[in-house]
Figure 1 (cartoon, rainbow, N blue to C red):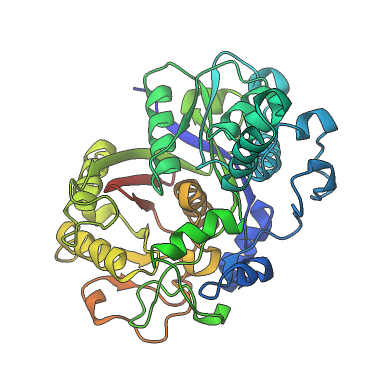
Figure 2 (cartoon, rainbow, N blue to C red):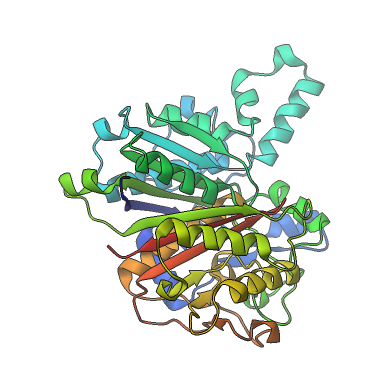
Length: 418
């Protein structure tokens, strides 16, 4: 089968709106978490979010939205947009430039796009309210489109004239990891030469508050104290938004056009807990199977993995389940370094898998392993797992990204230096 490499990255995130800015934040341990005033005003429990700077969506009128000057969107395009689509277009444009793809390659039958988003809860609410109060006849077609769960997919395929395979994925916090693994398979099988993989979410109280109802979010008001994956005093995750795009490409195709390669996407694995609608299996057996499947797919041993970007969101149940999975797979001397960059970025939900895969690619190419920040007292349950609390200036040869979603969906993705 074809080998798959990563040839382009694009970031819009709480820790930076470019690859270079994100790299700098990771190296410096700079957090993107802050108090979100509009969130705090709507509830008395949760106030922190991984806000995306430089973008502002004050009303449902897209003509009142503001975003960086280099993001060019006309009035007609904006009418069908949701915030996560605006993030994604900015990230796509960076990834396309980074990969040096000309318009003919972007809009080729051999180029596809897999994306993941939960949709815009805010604009879905607006669309339904319009239909119920104004009536179907007085609700515009663009309003209906913005209310669709797959609005990201619709907007991206139209904006970039995608001619190849395109699908929107939905498997909770494993969504963009599933999209990336599935995109790899398309290239390996020779069905596409290039695949864009996009993970994106709004950063709006309507996306955040349902998780507060589930008691999954941190109630801290100090950004220095949350989220704290692996810390004994962690109290839940902090949600973020934004978009990350990876350009995946058949290795031969990339070499032939002289593309710069970040890393090889060596393999992936998935497995389900079969345990609960929301809670992870405490044993971590589902994630352990996903990791084992990924190692087999990549044809590597546990001792080959140098760094793991953990899913760890800073919930007690989730962190413990992942620790148990890692302990069961990486035994003996096979103890890779582990961190959760969600301490800096926040938890991107459907965006998480793509964002952390992009971070793994940066770590491989730039020669470092990012720290698990904000830890004051490491949970004793971490014994036997090498959690790094300061940056390691050493290039991993092989990096793994874990993603776990509600319903017990588990994905492990493996990247390696070429």
